[in-house]
Image (cartoon, rainbow, N blue to C red; front, side, top):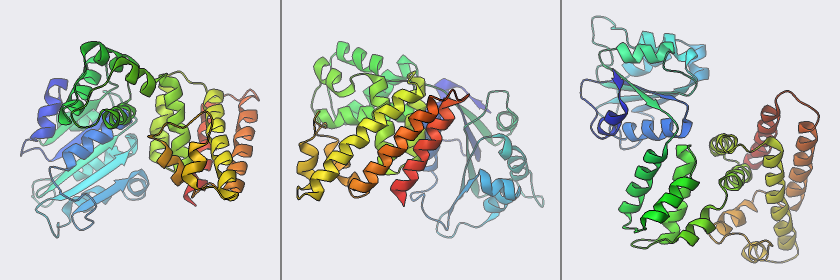
Length: 344
């Protein structure tokens, strides 16, 4: 079954009992993952329960085409439903999903189990999309970049939960400043919600101060994800940066500025200052909502580590200026390397 846009919210809130396999696909990775998790929560109160929930990725499926079918046939130990969550590109999932949806030993497919698939590199004509559109117990849900209407709905829903009131011109300003990537929009809306607080309000100046230029914000998100060692957030942030037409050199220079601040703060700490005071003394000042995160990053990035990161960023910028055919690949590979340093 192909789920129409107007039907998606209803399906996520009340999935039909006869449907046991769901595919989320499209060009918005953040929205794909958000919707997949929302649906998964209907079938499990604890998605980390390894006795009832199985997570599979492309690598596992490429090594064993029957791994999805085998996982679905396993008995859920502490739950009524065996939940199998799959994340991949798309093409490598087709044969494994076909096998999983084929009846075995005269038993209906997916009896007592639910399959949720995230495919991030597909079009509406892709074989896996067609497979889920035509299956009797399957649903195919497209996840595409937000337009102004869906962004407005997202803001209204989030603010209503906290009784935050804003005027229509302020809402229009928020919609104009947020990008099309759902994960990035979520983070910005959460930041605005924290600023307003329960039952609060926001002015146009509040929005200007908080959101500023979306490209600058996207690059700041990239730098923060690198410093945290958060690879999924880095992937989402870099996608947002590209969607805002940030070029790779801009991204690297933004990261350079961020790590320079970490270097200055790390030096202050090494000479006896507290981490909080070191962050608060930075110029230009760090937004108070982000000071705690940067202070925590000093646990990963001491003076020597921050200096090494700056050297690496300089090397990446030099590589970008050497007329490479794919600057974005060089940029992402370099940032991923730094991200891994934060995790070690």
